[in-house]
Image 1 (cartoon, helix red, strand yellow):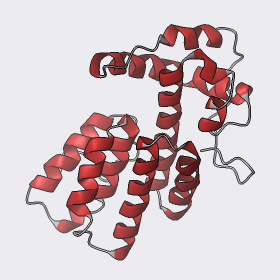
Image 2 (cartoon, one colour):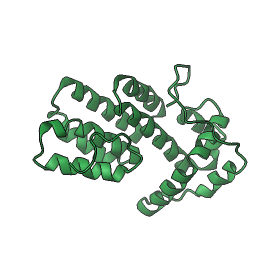
Image 3 (cartoon, helix red, strand yellow):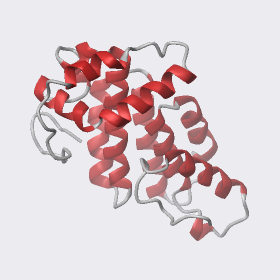
Length: 204
C-alpha cells in the first residue's frame, strides 16, 4: 500500500485516493488493508461529481461488502450520490448529516468535504446569483446570503480551480466564475470553517 490508509482527507489528493482505491481493488492485498475501499472510493467520486463511476462502484460492491455496517454505509453514500445526481438538494442535506453522525473518523470528515464540494458545484453552475438569491442559497443549505458569500470567500481558490477543470471536461462548463469572484471582492473576511450544527438548518 503506497499511502496511509484510510486517507484522513479527500481534498488533499482526491485523484490519488481514487487511483489507490482502484489499485487496491484489483491487487491481491490482504482484506484488512482493503477495508472500506468502496466507501472511500464512492465518497471520493462524489467529491469530484463523478456520478457515473460512483454508480458503478455501488453495482460492483453491493453484494460483496464484508459486514452489514459496510453495506449500510455504502447504501447511505449511494443514496447521497443519487440525490446529488438528480440535483435534489433537500435530500442531499438530509442524508449528509446522517452519514456524518453515523461514521467514525475519518469518514465523517468525508461527509463535510463532499458537502462543501456540492456547494462549490452549485456556485460554479449558477454563478453570481447563487451568492445572493433563492433558491440557490437554500440549495447550499445556508441560512442567508451572508453565509453563502463567506463560504465562497473561504473557497475562492478551489472555486477557481474547479471551474477551470469543469470548463476543460464538460460541455456545459461555461460559467463565468469571475462573476462570483467579483461579488467576493466586497465580502468581509471569511468565518472559520462551518461545523455541523443541530438547528433548523443543518450546515456541514
